[in-house]
Length: 181
Image 1 (cartoon, rainbow, N blue to C red):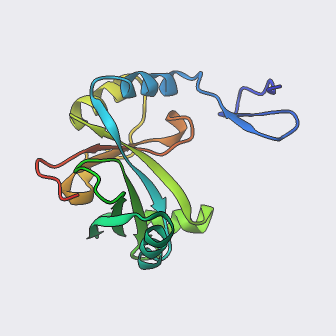
Image 2 (cartoon, rainbow, N blue to C red):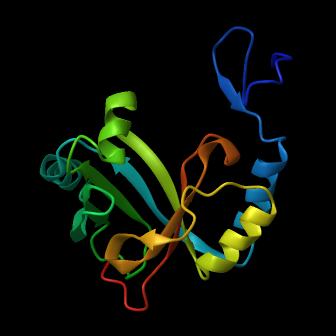
């Protein structure tokens, strides 16, 4: 049974056993409608915050058989990152993105300090970042950046505010013309 508390974006079962995200606000509904549009072409990757990139790459390789298909340092975002895929995956296949902080001031370092290592974001591949950003903003959805930023392999990215996306940090990724992963 769900509590009657509506002022908080999350509703808890009375026994405290689970949490249900309230997606009845207009912003999450607008986000869901836009994400279901033809502008979203695929799930691009799942981002995982890790304190040690080399150790994480080794763990995913040893235990799950994943291979690193792209690695880079993104100074602007303060991360060292690697994209991992199943061996033999076609170019553009959904990947796991491992993100390690370059310094204590990076978003990933702050995330790890607050939440510990783990799932940090879900990224959708989009065909036109500017068009989808405009639609989302028109629907009342907040984006974290006023203008797109450079992401992995020179992609263009922006993020939906988690409070407008059911508590999930959603990344929008418009791949570069010739992606490197």
